[in-house]
Length: 331
Ligand code: GDP
Image (cartoon, rainbow, N blue to C red):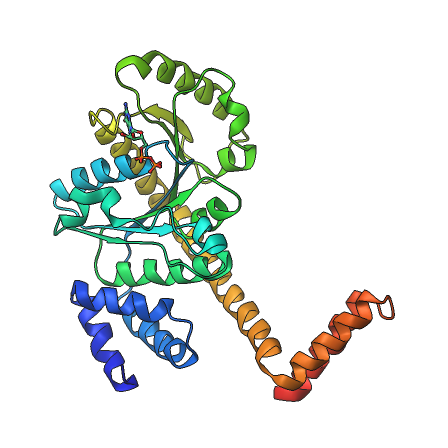
């Protein structure tokens, strides 16, 4: 793609052209330096109309029912005339190059729905890189006029923090358990959740789901009240992604929470904070890239790192020396 095509691509994205959106996301996912420069122009142009979707982060361990939930929930939303985009942050693809969230056929009906757009997780890159690209894909989906952007991740490691950091609401999907399942969910993840959905509340699993929901309701009450929450939040609810029970109620809760945060200014404050964090991370990333890409700086970094390893220089002093070279080199 030539650089002169970028404004046209941005316009096509804004006009809601899905093929343009897919091309735009492919462009921001590319690791090539010339593509990166184009991606920056594209993101800037696409963001101009200032469209905002409801960004919902969704996490849960494998098997909890994320794809089943997203399919049912997504179809419910498109049934209401809403346009839904689904993106994934897949930490496994960062490690192995293979993706457990990347398979489109997991949500077959939703992927065929003209009101929905599903984008598999980018692979072969480190988690930080995945986060960066997902953030940009979210921005492009918003520019394309989607009403809801679902950002899915598997409940391991830092990926929840990353997803919560680019979402307006964070939803944790839980499976009914035998009673000691609270230990399995780290406190930090509970603290990030706005809504805990106990999935599979149907058939034989109904009684266990009821118990699990009560356990989480109790646990959430013990958490410190956050200023960005109205009364009753965060809350636990039961859903069945198979029967569809509870999905409408869950959507009502998400909308109520989003409306309250908008009215109180928390929504806007969170968006501003996220934009500033994004900016800071880009700066950090750019500085690191410069250190790595410039041969002289890269050699200096290797030498200083060696000196740190041998105990010849304190890490802080070595870092300061290197940063001084960065300023002198390229100011
Ligand atoms: P993921 O790994 O989190 O994406 O989980 P999947 O959506 O692939 O679901 C894992 C298994 O749980 C599948 O066999 C689903 O059919 C089943 N499942 C998902 N949601 C429900 C539900 O609401 N009720 C029941 N009974 N089973 C469910």
